[in-house]
Length: 96
Image (tube, rainbow, N blue to C red; front, side, top):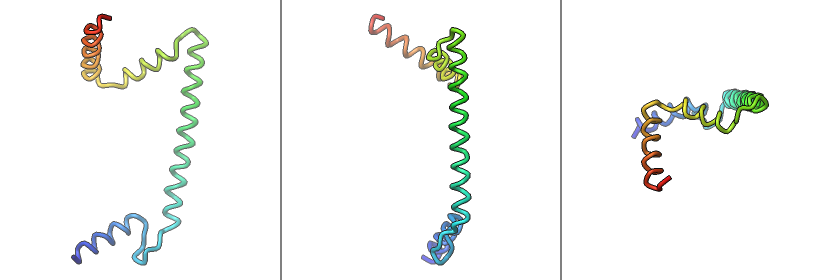
């Protein structure tokens, strides 16, 4: 039983909570601010990607197809091949 209390205290300490139950506000603030900065960077990167698709579209490429290519390239080759085989099987079963 005592070991459970010790483990709980260790977990609280690692979670930024002191033995009196007080939350370490500075530590928490640091995590929150880091997350907020990363979220802002994520939005900026998403905007950059959107701009690249827009540029590609203006030169005649289809952004929808490009997104599909990016998605396919992200997949494991073996998993992608397996999915393509299943897709072909299903399409054949439908007569398409």
